[in-house]
Image (cartoon, rainbow, N blue to C red; front, side):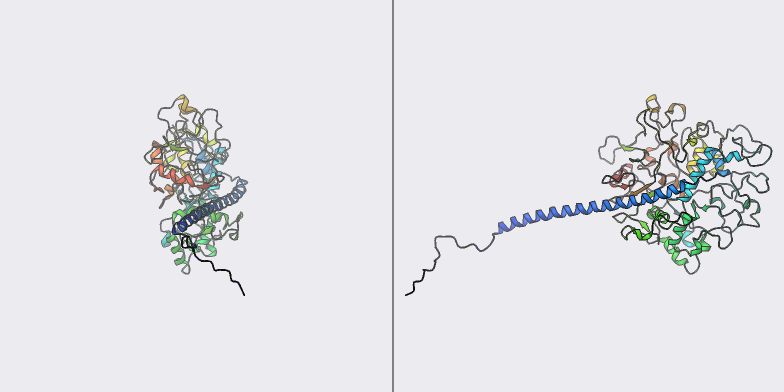
Amino acid sequence: MTNHAPKPTLDPRGRPPRGGFTLIELMIVMTIIGIIVSFILIASRDGLRQADLRATQALVMKLEGGLNDRLDALMQLRPDPNFTHGYLAGIYFGGGADLDGGPLMSPRALVAGTGVPNTAVRATGRAQAIALADYLKCELPDVFVLNQGATTGAATYPLNFAARAFPGKPADSSLPGLTANFILPLGHMVQGPRRADGVSASGYGDGSLNGAFFISSNPQLGLTGRGIYGASYAAAAGVYKNLGYLPQGYDMVDNNGNGLIDEWAEGVDSGNQELVTGRLLNHTHETARSEMLYAILVEGQGPLGAVFNADEFSDREVQDTDGDGLPEFVDAWGKPLQFFRWPTLYHSDAQRGQNVGTDLDSGSASTPMTLFPPYASNFERREQDPLDPNQTLMAPAWWLASQNSAYPTSDLMGGSSTNPGTGSSGGVATFEGFFYRLTEPMEYTAPSAANVNRYWDRGGLTGLGYRRAFFTRPLILSGGPDGEPGVYISSAPTVSDVLDVENAAAQFVPSELMSGGYIPSGSFILSPGSDSFLLHDAGLDDITNHNVVGVGGSGG
């Protein structure tokens, strides 16, 4: 007989067996999972942000290395000053006339009573410094704007690389499309005493030993120079190539024998005119500085060639954001980098520039911004201009209006000069109109012994307090995660806007903080707004080659 164990029976007094989680338990579990996921997402987002920052920093530093290589190569060459550089460097005492009939000046442009050019006018250290600035601007342009008629093909040269015309009579204005006043070096082919026949002529230009005298019968002689509209033919060639020009339009040769190199007629015909004009119509100024940097470093033509190959950059690092055919270096957020050759007013770890901040640091847009002095005491080491190691541009006899009283500013600048402010001569205005600042924007209403110590030359009570030699380092800048650079970029600039305002890369609005004559002439449009506080705030997350160690840039 088989015995069977009794089957278990449910105890009616006990709890039923558990079949799953309660709703409260599920909600607790889901909440915990949600918290964990949120932590993961935050960490992932922070990781992506850091990756974007590091990628942009790496690109900026890579480009700075290439830019330094190019600068090192350029600085090995010491260009000879021409007579125009000598005129700009001259000291004009006033109060009489020189023997050549012109205003009294020293050194004299012509040997007294002979009509023969005085070679001493080209041999001064100041003329050498001006010639070097002219050369670097020519070979390392940092921006361009469209010339009038560019988008219709009416301009002989569609692009102006931030250049003012040198005033004076061109050698032969009858040549079609001749723009002799823009041909480089400065003053080349503008009427002056340099004549092949030895006969003196009035004017502050350099002319050409061959071209100025024989131009009517031999227009190709001496006309072409080294470049035009602020850039050498080699520097401009990289832009024209990507713009869609025909090869003969960027080969740095006068193919049609009209005395002009790489003009519209050589680079554009009926087969590509629609393409080129369409690209010019698409161009936006926000991209110009990045496009110029790409043209120099990647598409470099001429003896110096290119520093990089296009294959060394990814599609994320190089794009054409405005569809004008010109590649741009872009940051991790898809915005074009900004490139400044002489950012004299940019304040950073690498250069003093012009320090600016809020009075009370209250974080309010209504808080007034203030220019802080570049030097806190009499004992700080003063800046030196690397292009002018002997500080010849700071010499009181040339810099002071009282000493250089007859400087022909209206002649040399064509009446469009900047007004640098109290005490400075027309030579300062002329130099600033073509190149970069020589004046301190910080002006004290009541100079005192304490304030004098804060000036560059410690001479605020003697009329020299507003002069300043700037040390500058080329600036490559990303606007950072917010896409807004902490320097102003004009939306539709003229050449004057770029030269007088934008090129200085200031982190403030000049009309709000600079006083009197220090405010550059010309109108300008600012980004992100017309308020210095907004501009300052936008730069807090900038990434630059001046300070890439931290998360952002100098910030202002």
